[in-house]
Length: 84
Image (cartoon, rainbow, N blue to C red; front, top):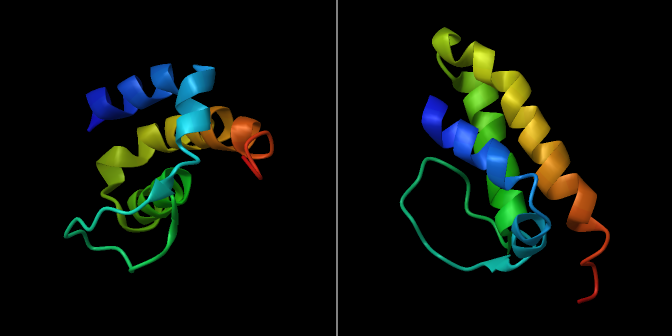
């Protein structure tokens, strides 16, 4: 989990990563999340929310990194890609 979060943190600094998160999510993977229609960024927000709210206490040091990933990768490029 820690390595995956670290890789996402590195990727979130790249513009292309943020832009590509805005592509529609169409896959159907059996996960413990509600069914939704949206983008990969929406999926990442849902998964991070689930990790933060129901995750194990040992994951608590990762919470700041998860929020940084959202700020870097999702929020920065979200408005640029609207309507593309």
